[in-house]
Image: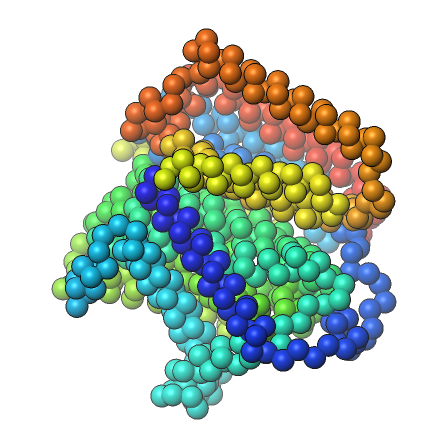
Length: 117
Length: 330
Length: 172
């Protein structure tokens, strides 16, 4: 418990420091507003199209594969810690688990979902 | 000297808070020092002296730059999502400091030696990814958004080899506790037993910190400044400090996992205290990171993604399996 | 002290959850959900479930929220125009209260007949990586292996859904 209270205090201290620095800047720094300055930065050109455009579906695929392989890694954590205690049985268990997900990786690869042109 | 300060601070809350403030100051002064070091390294690699004017060899240059940043105007673009735009820099800065609580500086200098220490660092590092995505989105600028999306795609792709390479080390130590991981390297550093994992970890960590040659999220020549294009003043400063603090953290984790942390090579301490050994290793790794930046050209985005999914992940899985078999047979 | 932190986290979790359902901007809603997840992780720590707390941050606050945000940005969901009709709003509020009451009653019933363990009976090893793993790889072996099949199905599903788009668009 006490260990985690330190984490909590650290987060507060960090937030306070960051907020303090920003507040200091807003107090000291100049404030001169005019319309052109508040436009999004486009190297001096005015903005033609909105920045909120659709993205390639590949980014979504990458995020999805990440979630899946991240969960795989999550299952590996306790296994790695317990490895000695689990014996050969635990070893085989994890091999089956990883093998099934490796099939997934091979499938994704073969279908070309990993290709970025 | 330190003893009296600690005694004067008394026990309990005050002591914890003062300790944490010291950690915070150390981490930030260190980040400022790293910025100076990076500029010096860059200068000497390109046969020029780097900053020279402020202080001896320009060592106070970053402090001067910091003061200048505080005096700049904070611009919030008209079309930005104001709340998220303001939160993002704070959110990127908060989690990096938590890692300092579990880093093993010396045998008895680990602030909190947690059961899940190693995982805690990874858990809080995910917030940095979210903060970058948030900052890029809230800016409502196409360069910022492109930079943020690329940054996140890159971060998530390299997170998996990073985690899997770390697991090969955990297979040998049976613990996420930093003190136990470092103690297990008393005779042989894990870089000798796990060279592949070490290499994967270092490459993935370079990508995770958005460092060159993987600095696509802020590729100046195509995306202006990437996700922090619209940020000015200390809001930009926070992104910058967080980046350099993150560099220190990944180097410190690499030093603890693969280079024996506070221990000298093959059990010889050569009379140097553990803290010195640790810092020597961390700074050598930091120097290598900087050396990378000024040596390698930036990789293309498709090369970057393909390299992670087609080389790093299969290799780290294979390394994990080989390690498991070897550990089982011994 | 513990009670104070517990209350703070509870209030934080509920408030951020409320923000999530009431805000009209999808990205803000997603960020409120991240806050809710993080407060829940704090509650897990109070329950001595250290590994679960860390995994909550890694998987939910990290990986899954990145996926959510990508989907929101990918679909380019615009701010929803107009206000919700008063009647729908009332209905939703009513449904929330009813579901909440049912949940509280159920927990109360379980507590009364003792199927929920009393608080504070956890041993020192409880919640550590070792304890969780020991359960996962012996008692809950079958669910663990089935999880891999579930993940495989997710991979195949994602590729099939997205592949049509990739084939259509050709080279970009």
